Image (cartoon, rainbow, N blue to C red):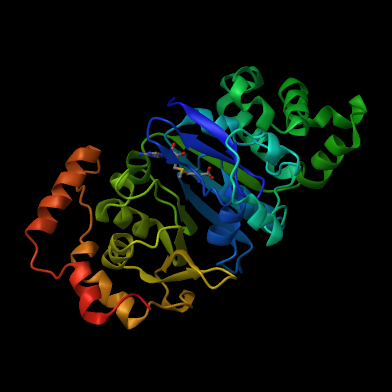
Length: 358
Ligand SMILES: C[S@@+](CC[C@H](N)C(=O)[O-])C[C@H]1O[C@@H](n2cnc3c(N)ncnc32)[C@H](O)[C@@H]1O
């Protein structure tokens, strides 16, 4: 595993920073807020049975926020990530820190006060039962490989772990939840079992591999696809037209794909793959992502004419990876060559001609 450092983001939830890539996994403004604003709030769920594809599950914020919101539905989550350690860590990460923790955190975010003032701090949450369901599913799928000792042994994560969830996991891994009543365990375990785990129809399937390999073998129809890969120049393989076409194939007729990316190349790639696209706009009226669907009616915030024109510039030329196994360098070089030899207008010329973004 690369060297990954935890830190407290602007809403009190834990984000990760990858030293090797010099890149963050979560928005420093708020990992949990980002999950809700980009992957949950933009949709209205109408079906009772839902299938979700979480591409780049990581610590699972997006799926967890979704499950926390739709507690009354039957949901199957298919979760893809290349890093098993993060998946195993996902139920244990504390979602909200105390106000005091902001001041002792060495990587503290100096924007935090703004978020506390704007009410983002503790606005969103993930309840313990969501993590308990994850523990059950991780144990069912990975058996003894999913070990609590391994989680506890990584000292740098220890202060960021939810101690309540550790108790739940220890109990579950030893005895299973069925013994809870007999063992006369604390009320929170009892409630979690009887209110959620014994009746609920929630399933998490984990696929630990390069997502390009995994999608080739999937054949389900998904109502929601979360695409949360690193940025295009760091992870072009998960934004290529060939990969997005695979996601399009897996999208149900009225399904939607959600991503944090606003970039020209991502939007044009989604269009070329066959989707209708629109903007994700938050309550501060800021563009924070893109929504794509096979059903035009699912798109409420369409792109302006100006924004649509921008997609037809050189900046919109997609990444290509027809065999779905090229290296990052090959994909970047292929696109650079195509951009250099293209007759399309550059985005800077387009902006000069039409005026700056409105
Ligand atoms: C921006 S982070 C996602 C954060 C995540 N959604 C969360 O809630 O924590 C990107 C993730 O992509 C994963 N990843 C990178 N390359 C991948 C690949 N080729 N296939 C699958 N996952 C990949 C990383 O392990 C990382 O967890």
